[in-house]
Length: 349
Image (cartoon, rainbow, N blue to C red; front, top):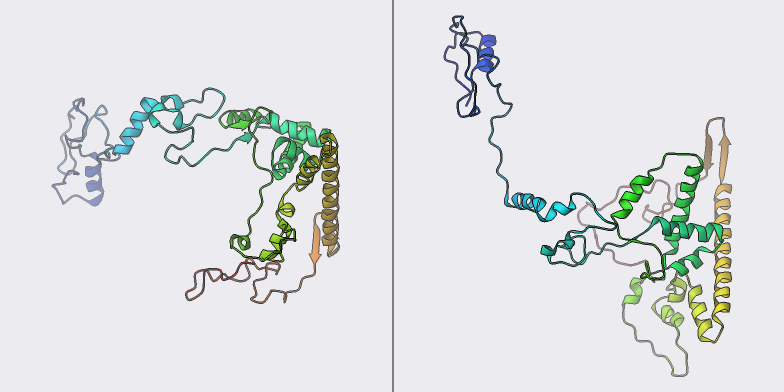
């Protein structure tokens, strides 16, 4: 509690000085406090006697420190004993909490969530292997994906990032290679060697909601009911699994091998078919980009290039929220917070 000022006849400025220069209560001072030296001058009735420079100064806060909770105390004890090994990363690989024997959990990052598994990442050597296979050997992306069991989208991303890295090396740009290697040592990684497990599934098929229902389709015994017929039974817009796969050429190669085609010939045909499919896809993307650019008129200045495109402001769809309409993201507010509206979708497109 701050000291009380007995004389109230002093001016406000003097009262403030009295409050700031008043000594602390004995309960707030340290135990080993040097004794104050008395002043030889006679104190005024409005100003108490000042302390010497050796006396301790007033603390900023006089509130008592909060007591540590039980989880905080247990965490401090953990850091002093079992958690001491996590202070610095040692070794070549991840250091999970589950590595502590007292945890009694599997090799998972979070002992309280045993269902979570940390997926491995591609090492720097694996990324170099993928880049060399695509850029130096000229292999198709699908063939590289099938050979190393890496998703074709990841293969394309690795090639793009490696191209940026090679360009930065030529330009002598600063690169955080030590930081990348330090982070890589802390993560589970794959080197794409033959003795490892497959890195990831490469032919996952998207399950459409229409195919989750159970249908009874009468079929004659003499008819051959294929997966294409099953997809058509669920809907005309449903594709068979062979067309949903990212690398459907693998199915054809396996069928050729089952039909007594030599494996070397089947692999050769697989490379040819994947290269042809990528060529067709590249030509299609090039045609779409050229058509999109042809719809725009460009005005080139010395500093900027303006691209002007004709649009139809009336093409906003039945409800005014067409995805291809101009300003559909910010022009029309959503009705998510309005009452009396159905928030659950009534149909699946």
